[in-house]
Image 1 (cartoon, helix red, strand yellow):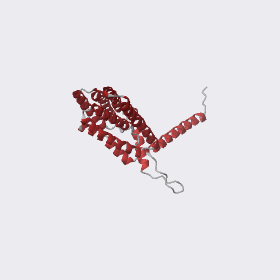
Image 2 (cartoon, rainbow, N blue to C red):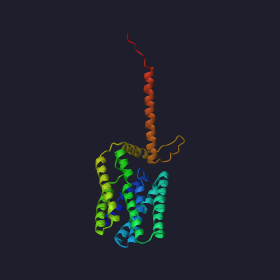
Image 3 (tube, rainbow, N blue to C red):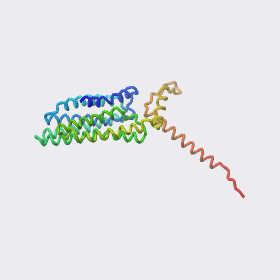
Image 4 (cartoon, one colour):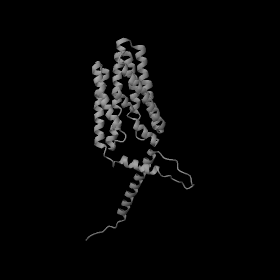
Amino acid sequence: MTVSFIVFLAPLPTFYNIYKKKSTEGYQSIPYVVALCSAMILIYYVHLKGDMRDVIIINAIGVFIETIYIVFYIFYAPKKAKVQTIKLLLLFVVVGYGGVFLVAQFLLKGAIRTTIVGWISIAFSVCTFVAPLGIMRKVIKTKNVEYMPFLLSLFLTISAVLWFIYGLTKKNVVIYAPNILGFTFGVVQMVLYVVYKNKKESNVTKEQKLSEVLQNHVIILEDGKKLTQLTQEQIIDIWKLGTLIYSEKLNASAAEVDNNRPNIQTN
């Protein structure tokens, strides 16, 4: 239970970083939304099962913490990320959990209800471990691990091992089965972190350094008004556009030189 509590608290450095920069930057909300839905369904399953009170307690704490994370994320996220997060909440919590609860509560009875909810809980638990795949792909693509915190991967792996053992002792497949996948993904994330943690000269790092420099300067327009402070995403887009324009001008200049070069004929 203690390790699971630490897993829920592991993203705190991430959200402290979001608070300092007043932006969610490249962080994604889907792992927290899926974790919230998974914890809610697992609580319902254990309630139907009638035992494992400690599972209910830790997941109730998890629901509370994940809710705080999501609210915090929405507060600092740009408009597009806000809308996406709200859509995810509607999909997973309202449609997903709400649908499972209504169908199970009013259309299913007895052991069949418990079994079906259990397998649905396994599916959502698997989604919890699969959710970071997007972040893992981003790490491989950018060769930068900033948006994949190592502590979260470490404690996720430890937690998966302990819950797997707990599920075996209880002979409950709903508890131990998903944690096999959790352990696997946790190890993969830590390997990626070790491989890419020293790739400090990636394009993402250079863009972030540039944005930090620009954010420390105030741009004054000709009429004396200050330009509205740009977000890091806008600064990076401007930098990319400037690089593209410069590259095109350079290619055009080179082509013009080639066209104006006199042809030298040899006898």
